[in-house]
Image (cartoon, rainbow, N blue to C red):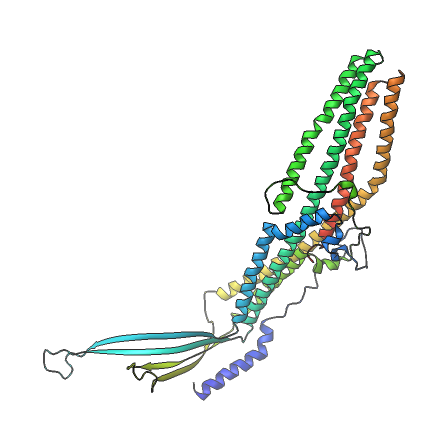
Length: 468
């Protein structure tokens, strides 16, 4: 290259470096994000949150923890999420290598045959000349990142990698919640089955008692028929509960990445949950919720794509160089056969059918969509926290009343049964009603306990717990 060319390229690079900062922008988290009042009717300035607790300290049941660990090791959706990270890491590694020059090795042999007919030779004589050229060379090309094109691509690849990592964490938190929810549901079905089988046994005995009372002319045949119907009403609940147990076991096995089979488990009455349910501040969702973090990383990808689209309006500067050996004779190939070249090139887009404008407009629109998705993820997170917290509060509120209801109905069953056996002041309809109400209240009590346990699980996941 001439001195004037060198000076021109140097001038372009200097001007580009000065103005490059105006072409691309540095990412900053949008200040327009709404994080206030995400938790309905909650205003806390305490940053303590159960989201920071490891999952194996939130759950005290060792059998549940063993299932969760197996799920983390074997779940197929989680394995796929990990493979997404592997792919994103490969893209990130490639984007970093784009800063370095490319290098190519070229080795070839060329045969040229040229006819020299009619060139100072007697008429009718043709002489063909055969030339063989041997060449071995190395070439390199380097695009100088003047306008930040490569930097934006690298930052976009990094954000994509981080988004895939956050997506894996979101899969993990959901997996933990799904295993725990199904585990407690399974324990609830076990308890309801236990209550129903105990009730059935009592009702079978009750049928025999009513038959004896009929023999003593204390009750009529209608009471006997009603007692038998009451027995069958309990019997038909059992197959449904057993089916629910079987299907829930199978659902847990799918989460564990294994074939259907029995699940080793504890009992509902021994489950312990954290005594203090701390939710922290809404703004902490930005760092704790994996799906919110994923949404922000996706927004960063769109932000860098807009940066990249802007750089296409400016010239690209490429340096190419080549060197090697070329000779007509193989014997003295490395003697007096060295060649080299250095070329600096500027490529300035003038007219490309509106491609650059289309690229920028599309990138800006996608960036706005990504921002909207980011805000939406925050709103959904706030909704889930609010719902789970209120569900927990309502379950706690029902505990005392449900316990008193069950205690009262147990006394009602005993009283009406005694009155039926020893006096004529009551009829079997009163006994029947009290027994049916008791079973319904007992089953509802199990459902209340399940609601409380699952509310804690859902709140833990909603706050972003489980991936640390």
